[in-house]
Image (cartoon, rainbow, N blue to C red):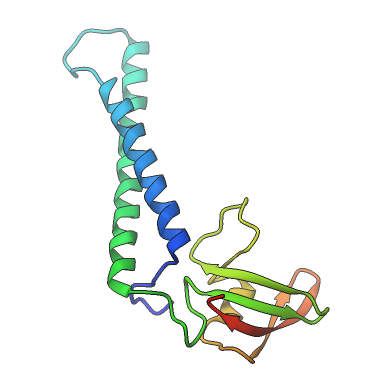
Length: 153
């Protein structure tokens, strides 16, 4: 990535917005359990209180990160349609003849089988490429190649 704000797809935006809403709700629940720091309690109560305060700080950090990412993505505009970039949906044909449509993302959820991170070997090979380009990349099983069939489908 070039340091400029990167766009995200509508699906990624939706996932981030949902995560943000969930985090805010969780933060509200945890913050509501915090007591006045001057109220009496034993060491176990104090330890629980410290853990909840730490949880609120962790949640605040993640909320801030997501809010910033959404703001940057809005400034960046829509994903590119002329060449592969972060947020692009790319249809590929692999050397064995199979085709697959993937999305180039910043981070991949383990459950999301069609996401390719921009910094993975395939992601790095795809960035900046367009339909008709053949890319070469390394896999744990050795060298591989794929041809970009289309963008945005």
